[in-house]
Length: 483
Length: 95
Figure 1: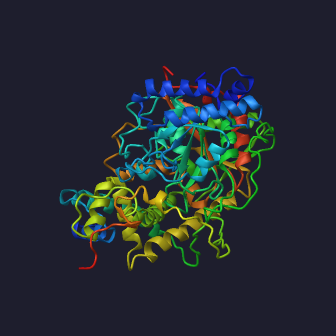
Figure 2: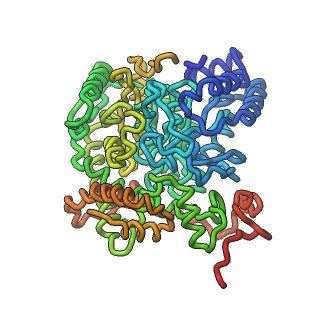
Figure 3: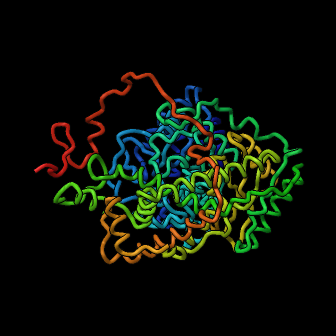
């Protein structure tokens, strides 16, 4: 049962093969038995999950079930869930019981979904390894000495280890796509503004976007159907109709034009990953696609520009954690400044502090033009590169990451080497474009991902392309040994 | 680009972050490395390129100036570290 997709579980619920309560109990028992190996959950919400499942079974019995009624998922612990701890994997919010729901959480509740719990992540989503969590590193189910990627590492590991059929994630520089690639699952970062950011604890507001992490493209389409849509509570939410993302899945790919950016094959990347990308492209050619080289000349600048824009926005966003209204407050402050400094000094981990300081420096008097303004100019160059390439092709493809999962501790003492792992994913966030990662092979027993990039609001196209690949191949069906 | 202890202390103060003295050299090193990375931006000529704040060049949405939120003071203050009479308590600011 645990290898079933959301779509398969939905038909099992509909046919009465099992109830939502039985399904939920099975997953809760599996999490209890297995998750000590991976540390993919921060909080398991057994009681509310079973309550939601009983409600779902009542609705199913009346014959009024929707596409998502009774299906269990997990939420990244960045999404506020009313009455449940929402920690963002930080000591700062270890005591934070959210007084409200994120819009994404509300939407899943309204759709009748079951929330099994909250998944592990890098602290405040700042990281590519899930090692910066206050609750300890999360482990990759394919090799528990290795990282699952990050920041949505817990969601990726939990799906990969079959502790949940699917999970939500968020992506600021690759935080859905990179862990999806490293854990051998499917992940989609939608167009900026497609999914509401309300109640999704802010890291870098102009880059953050929530999305699905699943076994298949079909499941990602089912989840995006629930998640996407305008929200008046998010000032950058886009007012645009939401299509049925499952509608185009079965369209043939005849005539699909694929662009391969020459900058996405680098000298120091894993040669097997380059070969697998080529093999995946060959598969698409068999499915009727044509391939041409495109150029994204400013790709290498995306990391420097990102490491100004994201920290600058983070330093502003995280100023709200001051020990006054919520979160950690230090003991016995002698005055207000002491309270701010010690509450923040104690509540934030080292990577969060580093990024706040980089952002503070970049925004400080006299440096604005050299850093923030310059980064925003480069951001336009990067966006214009994509616009030009996407005028010639329908989708752009390349590897999601330059290497498979690295060892826990391997990069933690050198932040810059960790940042370089996001070279292929970061530029999409700067441009605001949608992107997916789907499994396309293994290197020494570790999964690797193919990234598919589309034009603004082309999620339907991406899901169609990914689904057709998954119909023709079985990389997405492979599981870690013993699972 | 190299930051020293004094720079780190100044930035930490601006960010209202307490950094332990023994950790300062490591922060100075890491932050210097990050600034070296971001300074690669300076190699590109961006004269006449407009800064891009939003990928879709969207503008701020406006709504009518009407009260739409209900009072949730008790709910929202339930997570505050210290509250009295509906007010957030902080250390004395004015002597």
